[in-house]
Length: 475
Image 1 (tube, rainbow, N blue to C red):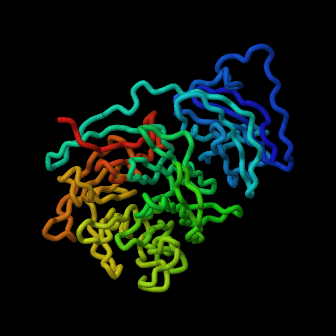
Image 2: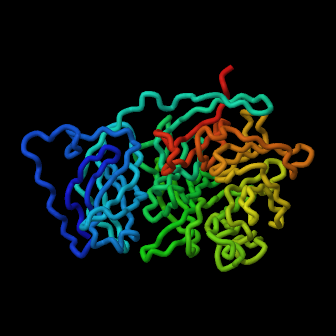
Image 3: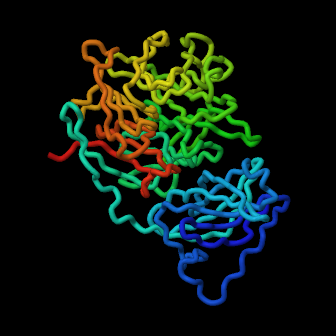
């Protein structure tokens, strides 16, 4: 692969970094000759002349036209201060000799950063491009409290933004000491600690895939995480030969870094489904996973794990008490947006999109048989669920909260105390205020934490994507 050819022009609405070409040569092209005298300010050619950015810009570069037929198979990577991130790149015809590519600027912390690009094809990564330097100024009014939410029963909760500039996150997991792991569509799992996202990621999944800005990663912690540090990740991966697989991996976290990677399950798939996998531990200490399916025939076939509910031991083996000698315990679930166990009853509830195109909520019996699902009164687009089992907010006790992507809402579901199989009421919170919600968790402090997934949408806010907190409102 032949790396950098030239430094491109700095555009008004996008940062054009470098030109990458992947061909038969492997010797780096000579770096551009330095301009005589001091480097002009704001050119990005040296740390002394960085480009000022707001964090919402796009990176642009040129791909050799001779590589046009291969461009769709390339993976482009950005190195931010030597830390890699996968770019969600799109390319189109530029000139007779080049192919114009662009991607969103990777997530940056405040301050000076060095950016480099590489291209990966057929499992081989090119050398890095010549660096360009950017500086991100601290936002003047980030993490402000935008308002108070009042529920139908009069409960008042403050909603505040605790992090901005994320890359279409799809999964959250909180530790007992208050850290939050954030799985983003770039394949990076970041750590939010002490009120900020740490510069170094906990994990970089170099082979993870995304679809139209949607992250395809699910994540959960071991019930004994505080003792064993185990983290489980379910995602769509692309092998070196270009084939796609649904994959579950186990890691051990130490010092905000995921290591000791073990592949627990892999399943070939033909196409991506526009929804992340969901993975959780049940009260039986078994690992449950739901991989979405791209079509209904796959849902009904035992030849694929897509569109099914899987039940596994924590080492990836099949439990002996499964209904059959397979991880599959339930079929017919093409788009399971969230799964969770109801406090008290222990029932496994599923928020899904059914064959009739409805958003529904239903549960599985102890024998893993479907119940009658209840349809919601409006679009939800479930993408993560959490039962409220904390004690901080008595009014929320045993309620289910659903992160709504298509519905752009946090849906609260209240069950009848006399019959916990019956939905007594539901209400739409934060509807249309923050865009697409992609996951929700109950924090160690009893607050609800949510993330948005708006990157790539014309309606995205300048500081998207965000991590939000729903907590006690001041009197």
